[in-house]
Image (cartoon, rainbow, N blue to C red; front, side, top):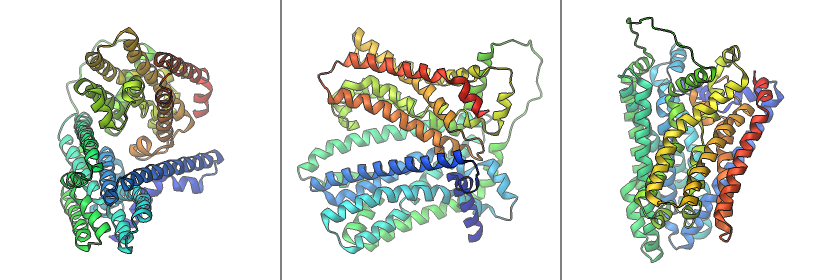
Length: 528
């Protein structure tokens, strides 16, 4: 069985990261794109390491360096839990991949373990990338014994196992519940989004507690934070005790709980795995079809309806591209129910929210618009779209319009909450309306422009397109830059006119959107 698991995991990882295509393709442009993506990943890794080092140095300078391992472990675990919930169900219960693999001489247990290992290896790399810089800072400033490094590396290897198991359990529950319903995708989307909202609300309230406790820690009361971590995630304290105190019992306890939880989950899941996969792929048919009057629709309306049907048919697509909109509503709700000082303290952005709120509201849905992978999601059916009697301009407009229609309800709810909370004057009110709207329009078109440059059609799993493609990564980077630059300027230059900055920002975003539309025909023609 180990050989089966090894081969299945190897094939899955090579397909996920595109190693086979990079090695065997003769298309020079594809190899250049992979190299550029490697450079981008390298830049992100350096930025992550720098951020971790800054946090670790800050904790050590405050005299609470012993909490560095616990804080980093809890942070990694929460990130793994949050992002794995999005893909646990689709990866574990990918029916198409299951039908291909079950025809091979492999058993169900090997398929489940290989899919779990695929997620585990990627998250293990994330854990090590966070822990190793923090361990380096701790080693320089605290001078620990050699056991610290041994237990730290051991913890980094097994750290994602427990949160990954919890996320997989939640993903399996969502898949199992939704498989019993007629509208499986809708139920899966609703359950996942409810769970994501609960996690985000919980993390926001938890971050507020940590900030309030930080002042107490600086007054030599670090035990409060340690107790908080112990209450929220005890394994983080077990790992910290093993690393700092050289306690093998705590490390053994962590490994036993992690491995025991995974093996128990595996044993239970394999009993229901085949049934869940089959039910998720089942389709109900009706025999009560009646011919009705045929109605004619406009080309654009038909194309937009097609895009929305395609969008809502994939729970992976919806959940991963709707997080920004949910965060926008949550931020507006926080402004309504909290005072501005408390909100800035909770977010760790003192002086930023008050001065750059319209920018923050607009930047959230830009991070991951559905247009960032809408072309790639066509997959091997892209050629069929090219044969329809529609213009290339109609294709672009329909995809952008679909994004705007999806964002519109969240935008309206957010604006209503903000106006109820702030009671703004005409200038502030216009800024709250115009800046997010300009960002949303720009993000819809920018995501599509990036996807034109980095299309991916030969995919096997939607997870690769939505979460791991070059297009989504570059789009997130574009959104981050377009948000960070104006925020930094507004905060760093307090004497500058806020309304003048908002006006210039709206003009630049709309001009960039107009500029991207100038070459609309040529780029789509190249893709065809």
